[in-house]
Length: 162
Image 1: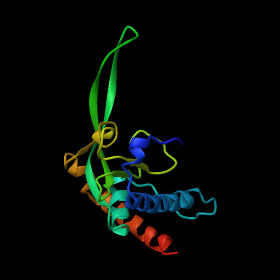
Image 2: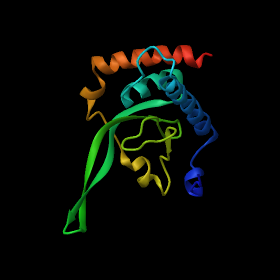
Image 3: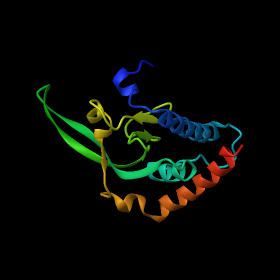
Image 4: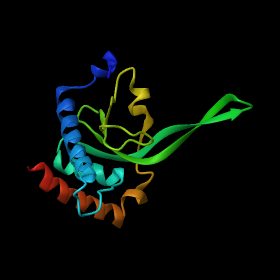
């Protein structure tokens, strides 16, 4: 992958270490889910559960609940005439420097969690798409998410200690 220099300059050494820890945890989940000898169900979690559990194991990360912004294109007779912004409920992790580590990005299948810059001239194309705020509180403050979070914490506790 070729990185944009101005974007890469926004990543501190602490950000790199934190991102590496998140990648390790997500890789453990993927390995477990892809194990053909697994006798228990696959680990499927919402972004809210994943972020809460990861932040409990990686103390410098903060969970942010809010939404992720997308654009719904409007077409008329084969021509783009505009777009409406839409927001999907989402949770992500924020580093001490204000950058984002997104372990389960919306609308993207990624090999690893995304590192998204939080400031600088390119921020509108990165963290500017993440809307902070408790606009979707009922989505992450419920029994299902709580149960998923506890299960993931148990898994991470046994897996990451190895």
